Amino acid sequence: EAGVVQSPRYKIIEKKQPVAFWCNPISGHNTLYWYLQNLGQGPELLIRYENEEAVDDSQLPKDRFSAERLKGVDSTLKIQPAELGDSAVYLCASSFTHQETQYFGPGTRLLVL
Amino acid sequence: DQQVKQNSPSLSVQEGRISILNCDYTNSMFDYFLWYKKYPAEGPTFLISISSIKDKNEDGRFTVFLNKSAKHLSLHIVPSQPGDSAVYFCAASGGGSGTYKYIFGTGTRLKVLA
Image (cartoon, rainbow over all chains, first blue to last red; front, side, top):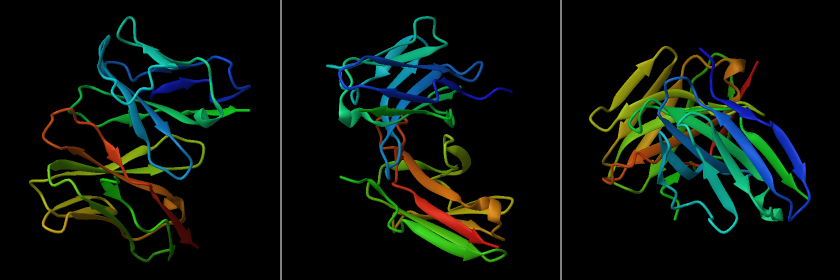
């Protein structure tokens, strides 16, 4: 069974540029999560989707971050414009339901110059 | 405020010996706890979990112990192998809100010496 797929794996951009990350969850998983992991820290939840609905986006900086999961499967996380402090690893995870164990993808490592 | 704390940033253990990784939490409402292992350039991999109704859960070489009164959990790896060298994160969820939001610690880097 394929795991959570994320692309790109690495991204380098200039500050003020837009960037987007893509995630394909494990087949059949209804719940999808985006996490941010800064160097030396644990992952921190940005947003959680139940199918197409964003049910917890309280930690998402909405002035520059946006996310969508239009058909309840794949998801995209966007930053516009990127700032130097956005350099981090962006992790996607999925689970059958919000009560089940979360499985993580490999992450996208973003460097903003 | 750090609700989940891993106070040891790193740990070195000889191959074949026991590795003990510790985690403390502050929120008494947490009712589900997990350990994830992370290799460089990979995402965290689920290792083992425990519900607050238990005090021990075992899976092969990995055992998690939960002490609710002390708000402490630990992961024991016996025997330790070089392939266990990774960063280990503990996570907790619950808190009574039903959101099942995972709160992660900052990780402990385990190095198993051959």
